[in-house]
Length: 153
Image 1: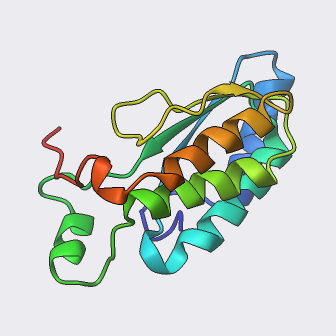
Image 2 (image 1 turned 90 degrees about the vertical axis):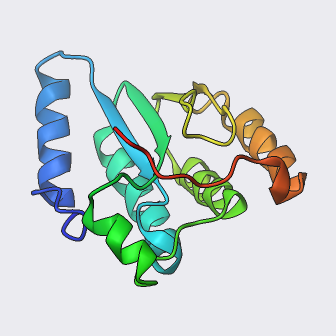
């Protein structure tokens, strides 16, 4: 995934850098882009994201939902049918899988305008409540959620 989105790093390097930051006594926030694997890589993205976060145990985990931006390769791939965006329910299922698989003491925030629901809380104490919030959102008709749109920034 990191190669596909041209992150310029890999999971092992992300873990090493995260551990260096933690060992230096610096607060660490890790930002996760939900849906960046598209339809075909969603499950693998969720599993690998949780694995990396578990290895780092950052102070904060901040969730953002992928929205394509103008003039980007991913938007071009979406328009050509080479990348399938996740639906609202699929993003929520990916979020649920990540949170379910987390074994951290991090604070989770998903209070960003790109997200479909706010599932903030401290792990592991609030895990059950956060999963319940996601499950309630999954019970809603998908048409109740905002449509996917192209970002301009």
